[in-house]
Image (cartoon, rainbow, N blue to C red; front, side, top):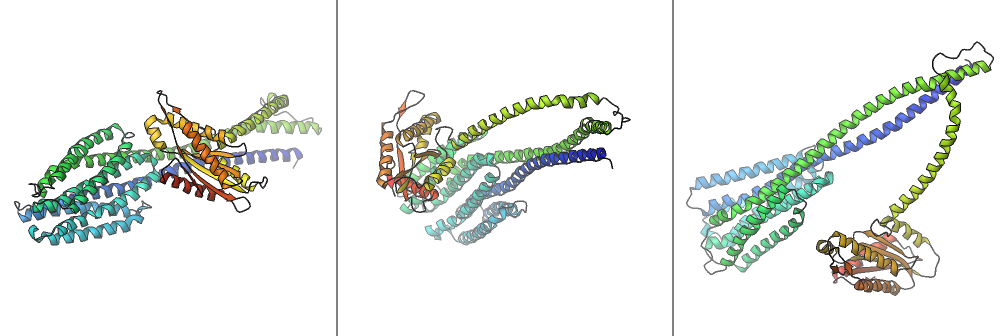
Amino acid sequence: MSEASTKSDSINRRFRHIVITIYLVVLAVVVWLFSLQWTGFRDANEARHEYRAVQAAMRAMADVSLERRPVYTVMMVDELPMAQRLDTLRQARSVTDARMAELGNALRDPSCIHCVELLPAWESASRQLADARKNLDALVGKPVRDLSDDELLDGFTRLSDVIPLLSGIADAGSFGVIRENADVQSYLMAARLAALIRAHAGVLPSEFAPALVRHRASTPHELSRIAGTLAKIDQLHQLLIPSIKVLPPSLQSGYATLNREFFGEGLTFIGKLEGDITQPDGVDMTPMQLAERYGGRLVPIDRFRDEALFLANQRIERSQRSHLLLLISSGLFALALTAILLVMTWRFREHVIQPFVDARRFILGVASGNLRMKLPQGSHGSEVAELFSALNVLRENDVKRLHLEQERKRLIGELRSMAETDPLTGLLNRRALEERAQVLLNDKRGTEPLVALIAMDIDHFKSVNDTWGHESGDRALLRLASVCRESVRAEDIVARLGGEEFAIMLRVQTPADARSLADKLRDRLHEEIIDTEEGASFRITSSFGVAHATRDGAADLAELLRVADGLLYQAKKNGRDRVEMQ
């Protein structure tokens, strides 16, 4: 084989290696993108299956709560034939059983990876439901006048105790759905709170039942139970209110109806009944009359819960479709990219590599004395000639490359600074604190025997945002950062850990030196006045936790942060606007 032929084969072989390498790199990127979309699709699919369990659990909670009313009917409504009353109870129980079976099937679904972990809770709820029904069936067989108040309350309480078990399943499933698809968090939060409100609201009639059945005043113990249930409903209502602002108009409208009919009219009715039932003769009302007058007020809760669940399901399905579309698009993109790369490679070889190989073979042939060598036919002469003129272009490109390299280094420096700096305050961020702290801990220079860490945050910062707005909250953070900068030495480390929490790390002679700095910062903040955009002004305070360790020991930033955070929490617990020392 001639030298020209060998070298031509070498060029072709290298070109093939380059093409294969480029294709493998591109293929790796495509596979990475494909895997990302597959992960998103898988998570959305898992969220859809876990959502089924959450929906079934929440509806089972409502169905268990609704079982109480037919029990009232069987035990206390003598006007209806017993057969009709028992048939109503059987129908209600069959609805609950169907819902429990639906929940069990959802938890056993092999497509739901985490659902099987909740099966023991479902089995426990099923057993407790069966035991509660067995106990109620025993009570139904006795005249209501022969039942004690404790027996009545215990019968309904056992049934109500099934609801927390189902609520636990709904909560755990909700966390799973949010983990796989964070976009549904606000909807599931609203649905979970509505389900809990519905469960507690459904308990109230059974807590009034003993007094209504006996036509007497409620005992202090019964009134205490009623007040406790109302307090739980109020707490859940307060948790629901902040999330309403981020919900769509349809849910906000549903909440307005819920707020008017249940929290307004329904709880007003319950409050009046709570006051009237303290009279010696109680209230002239039967448990069934209470259920009829009060039960309709609970319907908006169910509607609101179902609407929130419906919107969550829509969002999950939309996410799944989106990821599926992106998954298919990634596959098609990979195929199209492969085809384009193959075509471009073939054309590049035909119009660039092969003309150069032919020209090189011609030059080597002429140089070896083969004057009969002919220049390959085709319009390749100018392309080969341009290879030589391109040397000057390469030099110019090298100058440009050097300039781009310098610009790249400058941008890398700016990016490194951005990566270490909190964008709002200009202080170091947590990552930079960890790096600088390690340097400080390893630096044995200086005479200070101790290293101290001061953790601080703004007291009631959420209230500042809620009252004065987030712009004013940012001003408060900037003011605290400015005070910290002005109060520390150049070698001290000041960082914003996140949110309203800041930290200062420094070397000190004694713990009192760190305490002195914390007190100085606290006093400075008392003097600061922060103006709002509307022209108002307010002040802020801060709580401090001060930890320290010896420099000659195994001082550790994580341990200092843990101790300082604990002391900061203690300062909050002890009244805020104070310093707690290790």
